[in-house]
Structure formats: structure tokens, C-alpha cells
Image: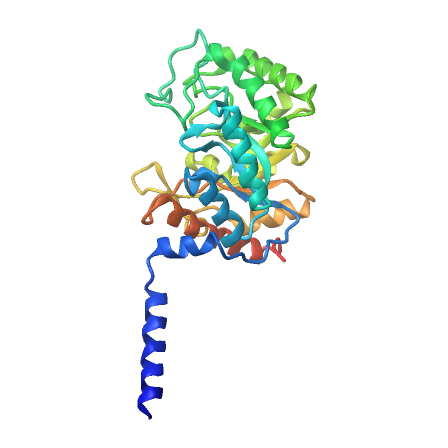
Amino acid sequence: MSDLSRRNFVAGAVAATAAASAPRYLRAMAADKAQVARLKSQFKVAVITDEISQDFDHACAIAANEFGMQWVELRAIWNKNMLALDANEIAEAHRILDKYQLQVTDIASPLFKVDWPDAPLSKFSPKRDQFKADYTYKDQDEVLEKGDALAKEFKTNRVRGFDFWRLEDQAPYRKAINAKLGEAADKLGKQGIIFILENEMACNTATGAEAAKVLAAVPSPHLMLNWDPGNAAALGETPFPNGYDLLPKKRIGHCHCKDTVLKSGGGYEWAPIGKGVINWVGQFEALKKIGYRDGVVLETHWHGASSPEESTRQSWAGMKTDLQTAGCLA
């Protein structure tokens, strides 16, 4: 081998080794510039941006250019809940979304993620704010109005909400809670917006079984379910097929995707998708079968990697594989 060839060979080997061992932040910087082919799916495949980063531009770059997504869900950006953004920040968010050609699946508002008045204080009532949201029951009309305004601003017809921190005995209050849900759904419905109720293990509707009862009790066409199998599993339900089979399929309006493992001594912990107990391939196949065309949104929650971004990257890898296996990604 000539000296020149040997130098070229060594230089190439060094470059390859450097690329393979490059810090993940350099790969993330490259994602800001590079662009992969956009995903093709009957679903609106998305990620909640703050699961990647509070830096909205960077989160959108990862979602669009590395993950290939065309959709994102908005909950908190720049260390602010969406409801707290001012006009200039909203304008900048629009600019960034346009830059990466991203659309918004829904506004992930904290509507009704508060204590129900005149009931015993829930053990789930937080001692800190939830995803940059710190509101009380008396603020809920404002939360509803801001959620409605943001949905219109970002051209989505969905606002996510809950049904109050979980009570040990919700029976004495359930009828009034359902009435409140129906009232909110009808207010949003008059504006062309759907209230998507999330089953949340810390709130009064946590499982598929509980969600089915609430949807039956509140027949408003403006109330649909944000089906979250991870949250249902965290409370001990087998979300697919058991919980899913109970749901009125035409009222599933959104789906959050994460995974969980059950601890041997009881309880749960989050996991990257594909590494937990949820049959996501079966769930995606079932949604495809019913002609579902709305959001399937990665809500990582698992923070077992070196950073939220890397945790989300690994969980997205599992979600993408399961979508492909289910025949839901071209």
C-alpha cells in the first residue's frame, strides 16, 4: 500500500470511528439541518414536544427532521404552559411550526386537573405544578376559554382535559362531575372544538372500564376520549384488549402512547415503548381496523436514558417498529 493510500485509509477509519462515537448532542444538531422522509400513515403520528425539549425549535427539528413526523402535540414550551404564552410567543411558535411544516394535533390543556370542590382532598392533589400548569378550580372557566382560543389559533379542533384529581369514593360526586364535563364539552362544541377526556391514573377516569362508563353517562358528541393505555395499565388494567374492548370506538378521538412495567412488589414504572406490558402492535392494528384517523402521540414519560430527548428517541424507535409491524406506517 502506498503512503498516500495508507494515509487515506487511516483518515477514513478515524472519521468512521469518530462518527460512530459522536456525542448524541452532535447527532441532535445534525437533525436540525438534515431531513428524513416524512412518515406516511392513516394516523396523525406525533410527539408531545416537551417530552423532547422545552426548546421548541429544537423539539420541532427532532420531530420533523429526525422522526419524520408531520404532527406535534402542544403542552408546554419554553418552560411555560401553552395557556401562559403571550402574543409574541404564540407568533414565534407559529413561525417554528411553519419552518418545520408541522401541524398541531391538539392543545394538551390542564382543564379540570384540579380538586373537585367540597370533596375530601385527593391524595393525588399535587404539591407542585403539573407540566408548567398551576391552576385552581376557580380558574377553570379561564382555562377552558384559553384552550378554545389556542385550538383556533393553532388550527386544531381538539382540547385535552381531565375529570379532577382522583377521589377515594367518587360516587357521591360522579353525577355532578359528569354534568361539568358535559357543560364544558357543549361550550367547546359550540366553537367547533372537541373536548378529549384523558383517562389518567391520578384522576377519576383512569381506565378503559371507567372511561366507558363516563362516555355512556355523558353522551355529548363533543366529548371524546383521549385513550391512554399506559395510564390504564398503571392502575392495573390490561388496556389491550380488555380495556379497549369496553370503549365505544366512535368516541375515541385521540391516543397517547407510552409503556409501563409492573413492579413485583406492586406499583409500576414507565418504560420505552416495546419494553413494557402493553400490546401496542395489537392496539395499533385494532385502531386501524376501525378506520381511526386521529392522533397517536408519543408521550414518553420514561426518563431512563441520558436525557429527555434521548429517552424520547429510544421510545420513538419502539413505537415506530410497532407501527410498522401493525401495518400502520408505509
